[in-house]
Length: 372
Ligand code: SF4
Ligand code: SF4
Image 1: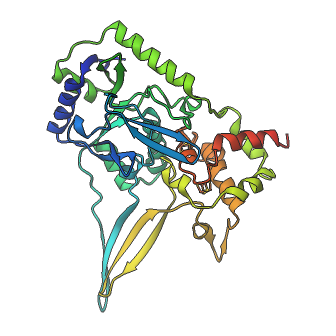
Image 2 (image 1 turned 60 degrees about the horizontal axis):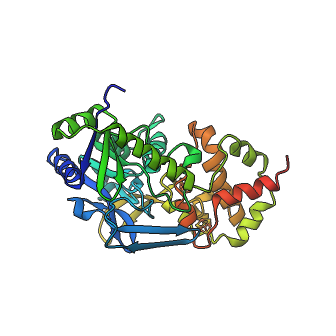
Image 3 (image 1 turned 180 degrees about the horizontal axis):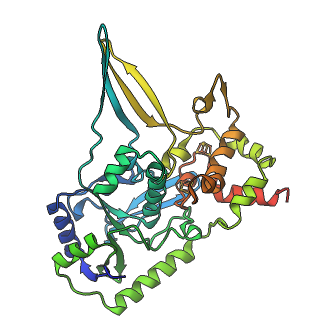
């Protein structure tokens, strides 16, 4: 790879990198501790990162703990929010308008975004953004926010040395290592000290590293990185066979297991809201007391009955049909629609499902009861 430059820095070197990114005019968005979870927020310096925090995740369960002796910055897995919020905002005013006596004036609201650095993106999040980009920008019409963000984003990924119990990115090839779609990638190497292997993945990343004039990475740093990736991969106990799951679900549209899932599923839509690739949206027209009005796009969910309303009826009103729609789209029909899977194995839908429904387990049950 021509644009590969690799350096190793200590924690102050990482702070210098953040300063450089800011001096290049980027707002930095990255992992911060908020509401008892690792979420996304503004990063001004190393002090804003979740140093010393570790999460524990299981189906329907998330706990964040702090240990003052833990000096690691990245010893946690993905939390409830993703970078989707910036690429596809939960609520966005598209048009504002005014009704007067003889005409309606409609003005498109400027969707411009400023230069933004997504810092500390786990590889599954980088993969999720790529999937979403394909949805928002791969067709004839481009979403203006996603298109603008794509032009203005600097991606600084962080390889994963701390997968959660609910993660299964290794079966999708979307983690724990980062292999594409980033400008820089960091691997936290901790052998009693905080060292960070930083590699470039684009010309922009190369130029940033060059400006910092850092110490080159050693072969030992790369060996340590390989050990961390192998260790993370071995910790992932969940998996989905991506080679067979599409056909399996297509053949089992009438599986009795959909009704079994529906006995537990609350149709709450949490799984779709935390998912970094779900893109259902609805459009609302709202009036105030005056003659002004707005057209707003907001996140919706295939678990919302209203979302399936077409021509005087609901296409999906039962919970079993909603869950089936969600899961078969993620793992089967998304491939027909967009040429790739709609899941990156981040595990959020498992952790944040209030009743602990686990997409990997449900695939196994459907296989066990399969008609073929
Ligand atoms: S379906 Fe679940 S595991 Fe897959 S990307 Fe969405 S939240 Fe992550
Ligand atoms: S699978 Fe879980 S998170 Fe998704 S709608 Fe059902 S209860 Fe809610």
